[in-house]
Length: 113
Image (cartoon, rainbow, N blue to C red; front, side):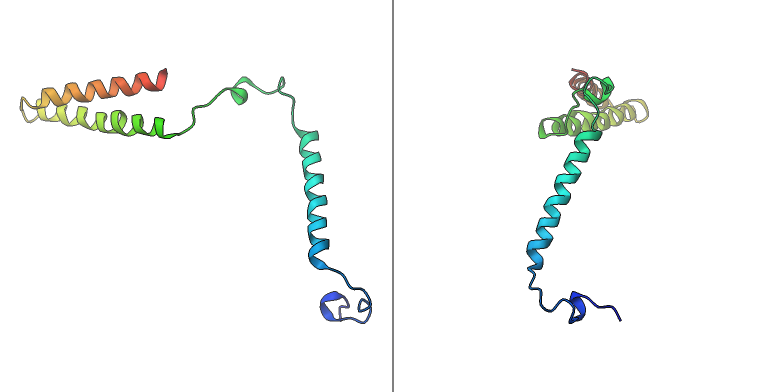
């Protein structure tokens, strides 16, 4: 039979330990050890490749709007307008093609610059 704190052993009855205090102390020591290990392992900024230190564009509200409206809706308008003009022989396809083309060009320019 295992003897210890969880089995009400007489061996440890005389000790009054606060388990929460010991647990949090152990976690603090573990956190400090991990932080020190990370600092030792972390490479210098000069040794990192240029792609790792380059600024990346984050996906924010200012980027979501150009992706949805000019990117997706513009592409759909361009394809719909081309289909309507070429296969259905409808004149209304020309303005839809122009609107879609302008939206796609605006999306490309916003992503490049």
